[in-house]
Amino acid sequence: MTTHLFSPLQLRGVRLKNRIVLSPMLTYSATNGRLTEWHLAHLAKFAVGGVGLVFMESTKVDPRGCSTPKDLGLWKDEFVAPMQRITSMIHGSGAVAGIQLAHSGRKARCEPPWEGRHQLLEFPGVDHGEPWELIGPSALAHGPEYFVPRAMTRADIQQVVHAWGKAAQRALRAGFDVVEIHGAHGYLLHQFLSPTANRRSDEYGGSLPNRMRLAIEVVEEVRRHWPADKPLFFRASAVDDDGWSLEDSVALASVLKAKGVDVFDCSSGGMNTPAVRDRPVLGYQVPYAERIRFDADVMTMAVGLIVHAGQAEEILASGKADLVAIGRELLHNPHWALDAAVALGIRDPYGLVPPQYGYWLEKRAKGGFDRCLSTGTDGVPTHPAPVLSD
Ligand SMILES: Cc1cc2nc3c(=O)[nH]c(=O)nc-3n(C[C@H](O)[C@H](O)[C@H](O)COP(=O)(O)O)c2cc1C
Image (cartoon, rainbow, N blue to C red; front, top):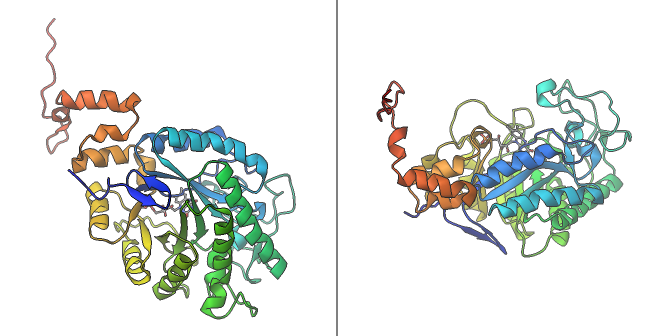
């Protein structure tokens, strides 16, 4: 059977084997901005599990942009070689390797979530103990429990744009196939887009075109360094309940598409509402992906509580998005893609995973193993257990 979820997608010179994407997720497991063994073990699970595009977590282009002291970085050449191990592992499992490049701006320098996420008054810089200054579009704190950043000068802006380009160059040398620019969740680019966080009176503030200027310059700079045959994604908060509307996102997506963005990744929040929602509303951000896809005529990626195979299939089949990104459900079940392939009845579902697993799982399925999986409403297997004779 053919499905939308398991149909390939050609993005410039890169072919995804299916539409399932591991959404970028910070794991706060780096040391001085560097990869640790954790990242290899963590990302390998999704590549082996059949995900088409595996995104490395938000990776910072500037040490000041780290949201915590344990964020990953790509601000130095020496970070490239360890990342090559990750991309080579992802490619070896038949998946495509993506990296999200980011800067947290005024939301930087916090504790990891499980330590309270409080902003740190001061902390030696992530890299080698350099001063860790908070910067942002204006001298306005993210909220009452946050510190006031220094308003960026034009020189700061140029430096950050340049850092994004250098990081894209390094991502290329590290073997990544896709770059995503993080413009969502109340971080630096979103801060510039926002009429609430950005009160500048120069050409980077005020009107919508002015507030979009930094995002556009970053896209242009990354595109200058990122080859024409490789796709570029941009993640935005499609709405933020703080002055940024869906219409603004449609305008942004149209402009960025013309500048070389291939996929607009539609998240939300992060200004005065959470960027990740726990409330169980399945597919809560899908309508944004649908509207932006239609109105800006750009490919979109839907994300946010997409958990069922049939749900993901419906999103794609009804033209609401071109890709589905899955976050926490993949943490729960790194073999979600394989489960979805079996559930949707695609031909050769076990061909989705490397033969080290696929060979055995296919043999087991051919032996009628699925009958062992059926249970009654009480959860007790209906297939009879063997009776051992003594
Ligand atoms: C642990 C964790 C870390 C996250 N880190 C990032 C990140 O690095 N970059 C980003 O854009 N979103 C990040 N997010 C948001 C996810 O990418 C995703 O948009 C969100 O979790 C909603 O999708 P889900 O319901 O499938 O988890 C993170 C979410 C979680 C749970």
